Each structure stands twice: as structure tokens, then as C-alpha cells.
Image 1 (tube, rainbow, N blue to C red):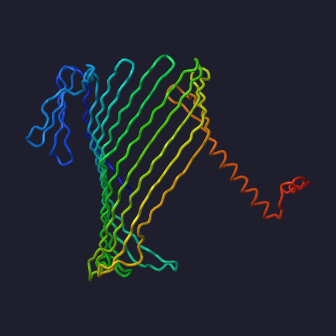
Image 2: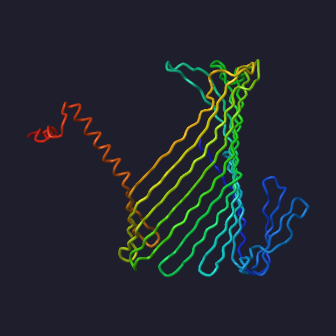
Length: 385
């Protein structure tokens, strides 16, 4: 039987133009309303909480201390709501604003996203002797939301030098995944009376940021140099708690906390060469450093709320990794609307050589040959010598 999913998408877009236009975006709980208005191409906004006005109708934009008026830029605002009959819901509110100050382009964006999924599984477990151990019904509801703000700057210093700066911050990220598992005996084919039921409540808070920038220098008409640096940080704080119902007792069965922090630094230096009218060759070097710091606690309890010895207490670790690679890519047009890119990096080449060497070593050891010179002239892979 085929599963059909239908997507209903409501999309409201406001773009700067002439005349007056009004549109509103509501919060998920419908308590806060953000209104956008265009009056002769100039955007205005207001915020209401129910019948109460929080922010009155105001001009959208910024005026800097030096008198530069960013409200003269252009912006696009949109809201979208999607629904799938398979049990998935997602909504998204996106806003962006752009302007130009002398030779610098500025783009400021905000995004609020949310996602809701529900799943239900009917499973069975069989042992090595193909005997049915139990049936299990599992139902999960997953919800996640986050806020993202980005600021992008693109400045052309002169005819040969361009500087780009990209900043991304995500905050107040929430994830919640409550889950119910019911276990039934092999004789309970209709799953009428469970002998064990587990309630899980899984929550996570996350935030992070990314800062990147690159400098591009035009050496001559066909050659350019680019240096890019990217710094990122991600933080996750997760807590799980479970309750067990064994038909006689209902008690807290386990608690788990997982704190995770990851940092990454990437430095990339590349050279670009134009080949012909529309093809290009890029080659260079990239260095990356990654650090992961994690602490973990897991506790189990019996029906008397006494902690058992099966948990992991105050478990923590630090992982650091360095990566270095050279790369080569060739970009070429296939048609007027399609381009292809062929890429190769040194890390892939080194892994391929390592795997081939290990394969040859394994064959040589099986044949009782210890050195490569013993292969020469041996006709090991020929029908006749």
C-alpha cells in the first residue's frame, strides 16, 4: 500500500513596491502578531500581543550615528506553514534586509523555524533460535525550534581586493522528544495487555555561532587568490528521564545528562585560474582543527528509588583532531544552464594508496612472500610465463 503525503504550503511574501500592503505573521501560540506595511515603497512594522500594542507602527530600518539611513534599503519578508499527512508539521518565518553603504553590501537576516514529527512503530524481537521474545509498540513525538540571525558584509576595497564577512548566530534552540514504549508477551498477538511500559521525556537546549571571512585578490586577468577563515562553536545540553510501569509499580527508572561543546577552526588558501571563456581550475590547501568536550551521566534506579550500580557517573572526555589536505577542482560548463565540477583532495588519494598497500600486503602474506622483490619474475598472475 502506498503512502501519500500532501504538503500544504502557505507562503506570504512582502516585497518593496508602490502603494500600501499589509500582512501579518503570528507566533505558534497565536498570542503575538507581527504586522508589515508598505507605504509608497517604504516598509513599516508593528507588534501586538492580543489587543495590546507592544510596538506602534514604525519605520523599518536603522539610522547610524554618522547619519547613514539604512531604512532606504530593500527587504523581503515571508512566512510558511507546511503539513504532511504522514505526521510531520513544519513552520518557518524568514526576514531579510539589505542595503549598500558606499562600496559595502550589507544583508541582515532572521529566521525562526520549527518542526513537529509524530511516529508510531509496531515491532517484534526474535532471538537467535528464531523464537519470538516480545512485541513492542513505540510512539514518539519530536519537536524542535530555533532562531537564527545572520549578518553578511561584502566590501569591494578596490579593483583587485574584495573582503567578505559572514556571521551566523543561532540561539534558544529547543528539542523535545517524549516517547512511550509498551511491551507485550509473544502470546498477546492483539497487543491488549502490556507487561511493561516506559515513558521517556527527552529535552535539549542548544545554541552556537559561526564567524567566517575571506579575502579575494585578483592577481591578473586570469588568476586570483582567496584566503578564508571559519570559526564555529556549538553547545548542546541534553537531559533524559524515564519512568517504568511494570503493572505493579510506577517509578523513575533512569536519568541521563549529556553536555556537549564543539569548536572548529578552518583555514583555506586557494588559487583560481580561468581556462578559456567559462572554465576554471582551483587548487590549494586547507587546515582544520576540531575540539569536542563532552560530559555524561547515566543513573538507573530500582522500584524502591534506590540507585543501582549499572550507571555511568561523571564520565567526561576531550577529543582533538587536526586535518590537513590539498585539493584540486575543475569547473566546466555542460550547457547554458548546467555546470559540472570535478574535485579531488589529497586526503582521498592518501587513503586510496593506504588501502591498496594493505591489500597487497594481505595477498603477499597469504602466499608466503615477505618482500616485494620475490614477486618480480614470479609470474604469479600470469597463465604462463
